[in-house]
Amino acid sequence: MTLIEPPLMSWALLIGRICLAMPFLVSGLHKGICYRKALEEFRVARVGFVEITLPATVALHLTASICLILGIFVAESALLLAVFTMVATIKVHHFWRMSGMQRLVISRVAMANLGVVGGLLIVAVTGPGRFALGWPG
Image (cartoon, rainbow, N blue to C red; front, top):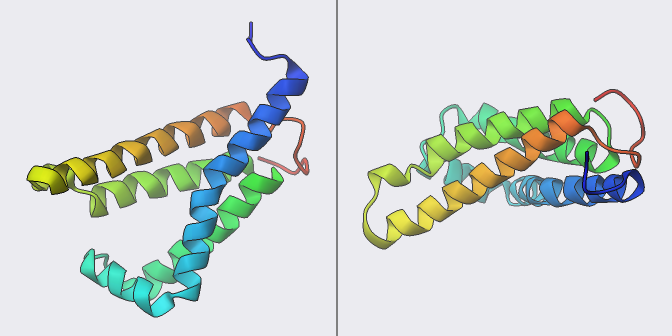
């Protein structure tokens, strides 16, 4: 038994997909437009192989977020973004190594990322709803 009836459920899934996709879409656009700055951020964060990982990150963010918005390959896109977000959170937002205010701030970012992962996993298992292009996913 669901609390939301099917017509409203599809609208909620569409809005949820858009909300989950927007941070990745904006991040991909920013990294692509400000590529040199993104390279430096990746280097400071000690992300390896930045000449490969940065373009791959931009491609993933843009492609997967557009797929989520359009409702195509939703499960695959959501799962890829969930895995990416967990890996990035562990690699970049390692609050357990910090202290004081920095630990508090970074732990909040990490917990917000955990919430995004949860939302992506929910979308991966529920599907896109009625408002989707209807391709696999």
